[in-house]
Length: 379
Image (cartoon, rainbow, N blue to C red; front, side):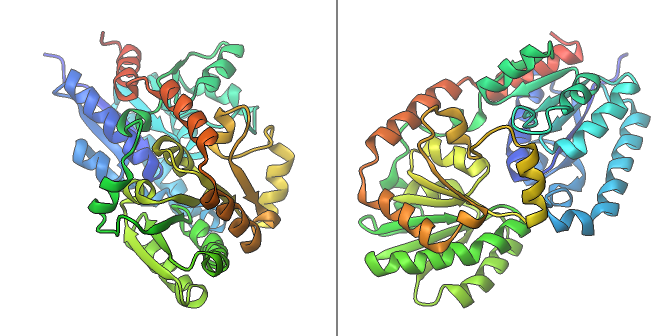
């Protein structure tokens, strides 16, 4: 009697945890006896993952990577060893390309089929990675339509599955309902502030964001600041910054609830990343910012093939979202941008957001599961 399939799966951060949970749920619907092992967060674990390590082990950036490098390399070695010994029937790497591509390469060399879910940004920088991807991965699952077009040029098997967030978020997210849900005044003026999902991001951006809010408060005396953080550790880091830079501001911090907070808000000030896509799908005007170390900036400028970083600007030809990166990421510039959003009805911007929402609405979890099963050999 054939054993039930075992699927290895590794996610590297909170957004990957949500993607993985939806994929696991769909795969279990098709293969009720399947077992999942690997790395994931609470959502993947609730969906059925036997997590050998929590997702926080890989959710690092900048200097954190150097401090935790040996730990990360040890975990990666252990994942390859254990999954190789188990002879998992399929390995799925969700995002985290610096970690997962090596795992995929080593497991693929052992004859284990591999899928990479969420294309690495090879179209934007480090395009030479396409050769590693072709060697290590049987199929790439793309969330964005232009990514598949890139892989087609290199004869790399890739499928555009759409984005699960487009399936989850209503086309017209209801602000009034969100405000009642979060126990907010329905007629208030709210700015959602999202300084990132990693320690380094919050430390770099929280002071700048708070100082921008201080400037805004002079013109919008009733402005209230809503700050959702991914976990308690990041909330503690933000609260520490708020004690220094946020005096006099009306600030409410939350653990989680980012989608509800953005839905309740009139505008969003946030770090570049997956949250920009979420804000676009919710239909909220946004100002995007980001800061990295000078060394990382020098490296990025040499390697980047695109002139914008936020997902809305990558998806919309007119690039309608204002971005403030590095030296441009100042309190004055951020406050000016947010003020322009608060003074406008943003009709044209929000219409472009809705058009992209329709394009990404593909039932992604189901299409991703179908594709994984094709690689696995089940039809």
